[in-house]
Length: 241
Image (cartoon, rainbow, N blue to C red; front, side):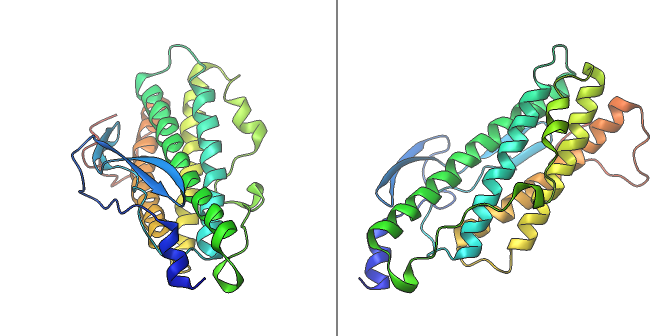
């Protein structure tokens, strides 16, 4: 099968920004797999108004760098969810911390769903149609300990057992470190990318998580009584923590 015919058989939905009514979900066929993708929109978060995660859409056949980036980011996101859920086990959290943890867990679960659907669709297509140079090898995630920002499992677990006041500040500190790692991973991937959809994922992570880092640093300073760094400016649209 030719490259053109194979790509045509993949049938990835064209869901570009601005298509469809706000808030309306669209069911699409992605590599033989049915998926539901939300309409393009912005969402409100404790740190301001941000763009929603990129929607599933047609893009180039992914190369190893594209597939490796997604595999690694799936692993990275799962730890952010675990860290968020661990701090949420505490009662009486500062509502700003609780809201931050809830939003991060919900957002990254959604992003995992989208990236997993993308990965499975291409895997299915490679098995069914791929051959020769047109079928990149399956790409497993790297060892998580080598990924920037990944936290030792025992440190993630410790957030559950620390006293509440310490746990919420430790959560913010660790999540800033974790987000910085995700931004680094995304920046490192850009320039090696081939697939325009995964490129938009990396760009989204850089923009959104950089904003979240600024907010969480200010919030941690507020809770710990530290003086914010000289010259620090408020996050646009986020309001005072």
